[in-house]
Image (cartoon, rainbow, N blue to C red; front, side, top):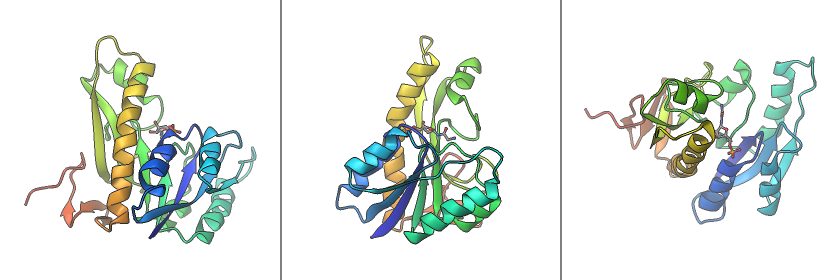
Amino acid sequence: MKSIVVLISGGGTNLQAVIDEIHNTDEPGQISAVISNKADAYGLQRAQQADIATHVFTFQKGGSREAFDREIMNQIDEYKPDLVVLAGYMRILSPEFVNHYMGRMINIHPSLLPEFKGLHTHQRALDAKVPYHGASVHFVTPELDDGPVIIQGKVPVEASDTAESLQKKVHVQEHVIYPTAIKWFCHDRLCMLDGKAYLDNKELDSAGNPIST
Ligand code: GAR
């Protein structure tokens, strides 16, 4: 059974998908704890409703990022996690934090990486008039939103779309691809080696598809 620690900052709809698809099923993964950097994150209530331990760490203005991240690392490590899942955790991580969990920390980002790293991805996708938008699950490496992609979910962008409607469509994809990636990890099918993602021992390309050899 894999121990999973989930980090959130907000509503936690992705956390809910992981609770429903993995934690509350006979998949070989259990969420040991949910950690938030926001005391009012609704995701904390979702965790409590599922009887999952919760912790809140609030960053104090003027404090050090390194010290804050170290506090969270100490808490995470009490649960001896096999996997750390960033589910809408809206803080930039210190290099020490990223290095500590390298190969066992994944993130979901609301764009088809490498497009639209950073914030406001839905509006930026509209402004760029791309035909497709979506979400990517990737291993976390020191460069922001840059680690090897594991799986992507794609949605067509329609002329009538707004940032809100796109966000809704992307969320539907997120709730499918994040549990999928986590299940692969729990079944020992997914790993990161030398900065590359592998599924069933096959290297994945930049869109998360197996490279045929
Ligand atoms: C998700 O759309 C996720 O892709 C995004 O935050 C949202 C969290 O929603 N993450 C990022 O932007 C990370 N840079 P949720 O709290 O309902 O799961």
